[in-house]
Length: 240
Image 1 (cartoon, helix red, strand yellow):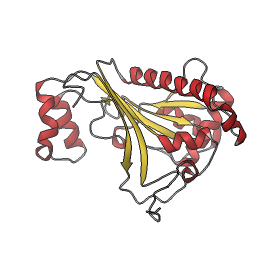
Image 2 (cartoon, rainbow, N blue to C red):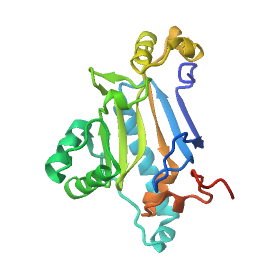
Image 3 (cartoon, rainbow, N blue to C red):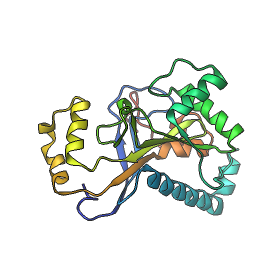
């Protein structure tokens, strides 16, 4: 909505709250989300390129200011050489089937699959980062730009075996957004204030969200997100 109001580049770093009953080493009920939205894009590839440059900046800053501290913990700072490899979601499923005999996946990846794709990316593509694109429409929010009947102009970024980012191109057309709401089972009349801005024109736009604890944990090579935040908040812990 801010992009439509003239703010072509918007970012926010703040707390987010997960209303889900996860209780794993890769989920927190309160976490820090680094979000950005950008207008006047061509498609999700512009957003992916933006994230590449952001991650390269973060990595260079870590090398300059935090290398000795990270190495003292037995961890290594990752490298991004050139463009992060990109795999279509369906191509990733085929790799999982052929290389690792994973045949129980259709519309999403489980944690084991993300780890296997990291293994593949590191060994075959020489990268600890991997973009997965064209996720199934059923598994994406209603505001995600569809691609054909089943896919989307969206992506996940995997880093060292875990998804750290979800992003993509957003729907900017009012009628298409209403149709997408209906496809997802939402009633458009319940979202009139949200839809209002789309009636008057919205530029093509997209964005992403990076989970701070996830990227921190993986830079430090920790398996449990609770080791990457000072006061972890999960289903069992509210204080301190």
